[in-house]
Amino acid sequence: MERLFADGWPAFITADREANRHLGRVREVFADLELVLLDGDDELVAAGWGVPICWDGDPAHLPEGYSDSLRLALTGHDHDDHPDTLVVMAAQVRPDLRGQGLAGALLTALRSLADQRGWRRVIAPVRPTLKARYPLTPIERFATWTREDGAPLDPWVRTHWRLGARLVGTAPRSQTMTGTVAEWQEWTGMVFPDSGDYVIPDGLTPLRVDRDLDQGIYTEPNLWLRHR
Image (cartoon, rainbow, N blue to C red; front, top):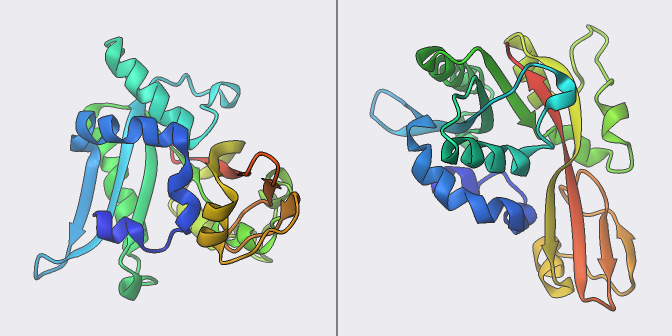
């Protein structure tokens, strides 16, 4: 699973300090919510995972995003809360097998985990992959873009949409990635001579660089989709 999830994501995605504080324990506490799909030869073809939270179904009460969902799941676990919502945190298909319907099968299987536990709602903070081509467009505006047939413009959002998921909110600050200028230069293959905002490869929004503080901060937006 680690090898699978290492592919297809920008190098800077691991620089979310808030998420990194929680991920180790999340993987331990919610190991039963990790799911893999195997082919006929028992080879890994796709994998995904989620966390349980309490959510009343009101879009105004959604978590702030990806990192906040991790925090809420662990806080609920420590307080012995009774979750009612599965948050699908990640779903990845082996690169050579993409476009064959495995992503939909994986998301369906993850929704089944919620059914097995009696959780009424399934939501996902989705990273719209096409947004990287429009980093200057606010996520709220991007969320409204559709094709001529009415389907979402973004292909990953469209995969969820075809399964019945619908947009219920945006998460403008779903994750925050922080690193030194040298680290960002390594992650992006760019040079940042001055302080300011930079459009970076695979970035959904610009990176803000502060040379005086030797720091780059990138805030990643997501879209909240509700499967049920």
